[in-house]
Image 1 (cartoon, rainbow, N blue to C red):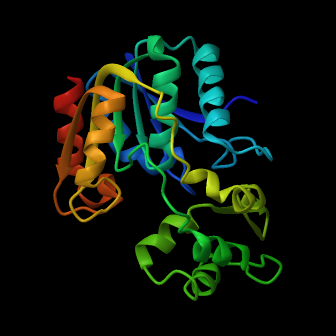
Image 2 (cartoon, one colour):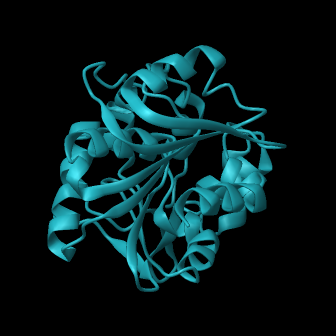
Length: 254
């Protein structure tokens, strides 16, 4: 039950955790840039995502335990840990529970508070993909367009499609488990959790995931934290403004 990962480069471990319905490969371009600075990038697929194992249990506690086993397996210590959205909450919990393994924490566009469920139409659209009928990505895109209007969002979701067997498409994600436990994604982390090492919280200036009010909560639980805004970016700040995102992370870790 070891998490799948793509490991790039060598040096100090630098783990990246993707968001809901994503995968480690979403971060490959930035990872190659970070690796050139002397870091060993670990692009991890969290449970029920990407190429990692499927399991009916889905919670931040389970995902933090998965990451602990991963670090123990590879003997990782003194890690830089970056998480986006859902991956950010996993990263926050992991850092608070196992601070001895984390040297610096980077959180992309998420706070430790509660968020209401807002993935219903996306999950419904993915559930509507009948691969007994749909045989091409173009057909899947057309079907999904009835549920997800934004082209960029559909392209992100369609990365989950792969060839299950010759001529037969399938989804890498464990859609049934994610639909059952989707409310877990928005759950707040315990207010008792604290992390005292350096932390950087990055938010998009067009995103509402980290509000001004959230900053007080962040600084209360992550006592040595900085909140920085990435311009011309929404929730997907690392893809919408990758240069400013990269430069902000580099100034924090180098």
